[in-house]
Each structure stands twice: as C-alpha cells, then as structure tokens.
Length: 195
Figure 1 (tube, helix red, strand yellow):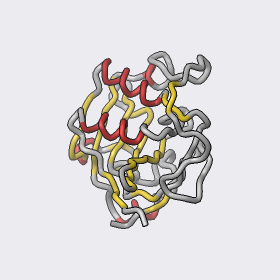
Figure 2: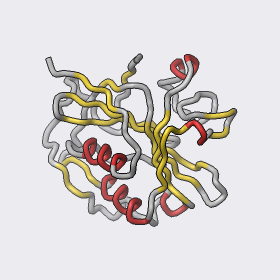
Figure 3: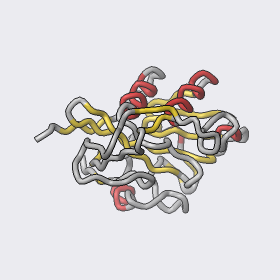
Figure 4: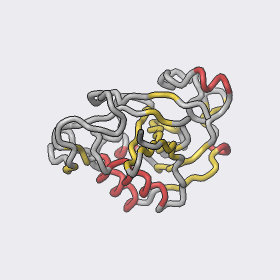
C-alpha cells in the first residue's frame, strides 16, 4: 500500500513520530467560544451523520492525495462525478443522538498545551459524513489512523475549515478507533514498529 504524509494543519508539527511537545494530557474544552455542541455547525444543520469505511480508489485518486477535495476534482471520497457514491462504502453506520453526543465529547478533548505530532498514514479509508435533510453531504471529515507501538494517532482531511476533530490529545486516536468499532465500522490502521 502506498502511504502518504499528512500533517495536522491546525497543530504544531514535530520531528519525531508519536512524540508530542509540552504537555499532552487530555482535557475537555470548556471555552464557550470554541466548544463544539449540537448548536454548532454542522451539527445544527444535519439530518444525519454517517460513519463510513471505504476502499480508496484509482491511481488518479492517489495523485490527488494532498489536495483538499472541495472543488470536486479529486476523489478522496468515492464519487460519481461530483456526487458522493455511498454504494462504495464497505460499511456504514448512522449515528443516534447518543452517538452524536459521544462524537462531540471526543472533538472537545485537547491537550493542555495543544501538543501535536507528525506521522505517516495509509490511504484514506474512514470518514464522518454530515448529511442534510435532503440527503446532500454538506461536510465530511476523512480520518487516517496510524499505530506506532501502543499509541494510535490520527490525521484528518476536511471538506472545509468549518469542521474538524478539534485539537489533538494523546488518547483521542484510541477513542476515535473505539468510536468507529462500537458502531460496526472497523477502522483501517496503518501499523509501524518503533526503531
């Protein structure tokens, strides 16, 4: 499998895989201006939220890996033209209100000092899709998981700057993996061994 590097764009990069800067203890964001809740976009504008797993596609898809898929020219998600093709998902799960609450809780976690990491992950295979009441996907978060020793980290690509998984913290990758697994959508995790 060809791999690619994605560095979390909203965090500080590091030179060592799986290590963090400063203090990576996880805390819950209580800042009313930045805290995500059900009244925050896109949660306040969805008919449903789907967790999905899919097979990353063709050679042309791989050429567009480092481009944000906001123009519809790339194929980071399975598409037919500009329409996302849900028939290509090998598994999917629609979140309940309780599941949405769990996702929001994970998003609101961060490290004390907004620590970060740099890592190499496999081809995209998991995503969270935000779908409006007309069935149109209004936003998405594509997640790449990587395991280094016992630590599971993640990286993300989003449909716009309006949505993301919040700040990184040391347990968020494991929590996201369990979040998908508990709902029957098995995450694809690229595993590497420490030197």
